[in-house]
Image (cartoon, rainbow, N blue to C red; front, side, top):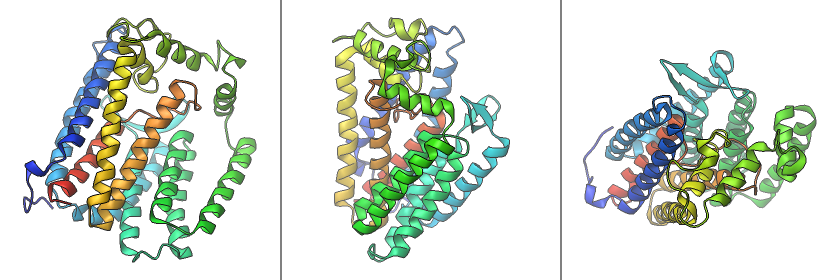
Length: 364
């Protein structure tokens, strides 16, 4: 439902939009730098540029909609994402040991990215309809079941990082709305038991290795610990002003694997240095600040929960990606929002920003 009723570009959150666009520009610059060394016609850069174009259109179109439209679509988006997660297990393409992608005409789509949006919307829909009776077991365990279904399907791919991220989105929103502490503690205990059981019966060897290497990178520095070692070297090599775009030895000489996605922060640290990293962190701080302001000012429960879900999603991705790049967290393959290469992630992130702009542009 497109509507110009009460819409005004002057009411846009330009700080939010500016931070998002500048982060996207930094990501494009870093991806362009990585592509220079590949001699493959800048394939990653061109695909990301297409993603930015399509995502920008989605952002603008979504900002024109009444955000109530997304309340009406929440159930359908969630169930559609569940169907895609089921289909990808049978018809998806295997990339990095996980059957997580649909590929068509040279482009790939990762259904779990749509699931992140679908989960946020369905939780916002339920929370806004529950009359703030968040102490009821039906609310806590009902929403937990919806999250659990998505976590199971993603784990079967297997994509442990995204599965954990989905669980954290639900858990974070339960804390935000004030679910009963007893239920929260029960959920934490269940997760601990599943983690212990998963280590012995579910996790594959390469996933266990990632956790062991996180604890001790020197355990296998030329094998499983290689990625982390090279990432830390890259970040440290940038010093204050960096080596310059296209001049980072770790990324340009391919010592740093998946430099355009998982380790994009290390590329920025090496080539733009401490100054570039600080500038990027300031932009993320502005992004988080504006999302908090939307949460505080909006008078609509659905809009407030969507903004809370977006804040949780972006902050967790930000923390996990950077933490993994500097050795504070295990490497999980989680991308850096708006910066890492990945059309699926970028499109959904920009779409989510568009939904929030539709809230802001109508004066919350």
